[in-house]
Length: 314
Image (cartoon, rainbow, N blue to C red; front, side):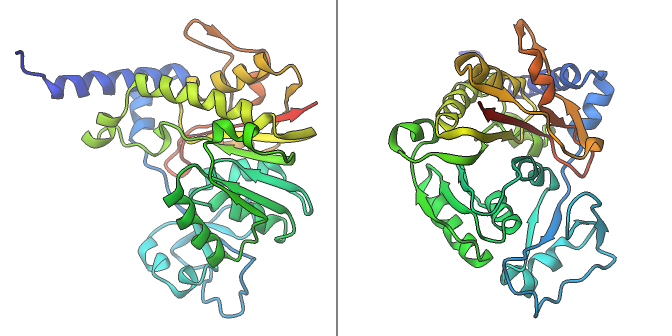
């Protein structure tokens, strides 16, 4: 039996990954490699659901302003000091990459709305929803993984988030098991996670493949259709991933447009500095021109790669 040359296989996968980045963002391979080498930064935001009276957290040299969101800062150094702090333990501050703020801002949650997070764990985005609505939205959380759900419940309790109902169902069958309808739905879909990858890490590139991307795309298409069917007429769904693969992004939203004639892409009102328009084609696949209204985050060493689409049920 011939010996498998894993080093050669991984080198070929890295090259394919770089070629895909080059095509997605319209850059040369040198620029694509620079993008691929950028590891995402981290940020911290104040959690207004917890009493801030005893908060020791304050702006200092470890932090940099994020101009486009309230009470959030880049962590420039010494993140471990913040994560071990009393404020972090008490849930007064929350750590996320700011790309994760964008789907919640796109959702525009309001008090008294019934809001469902379809793939909710680990809970950072729905905690942000609760914060923006002063804990007055009726929040439902679902996650198919029981262990992740229990961890998230403990986290959300620490953050002071009020949950209306918790379910543990595969996201792709939710519309078959839930009778309720929702004003807003967030689908931060399980994905290949390219935005968090270091493809020059042997472990990360070993787990990456186009085969896995296509498998996830099939699941994501089922999830977005199921979630859309749970919207009230006039309701809004935000679909997001932390990956660059068009098969998991524009391809999924395009499938929704093909299968649901009452799905309408809404122009996103988000900080333009970080965003690129969604693709209208990929390979031999031609997408609706409406996909240019969806947005991508180009990794820049702070923001991680992300994709956001906002859809209304007419």
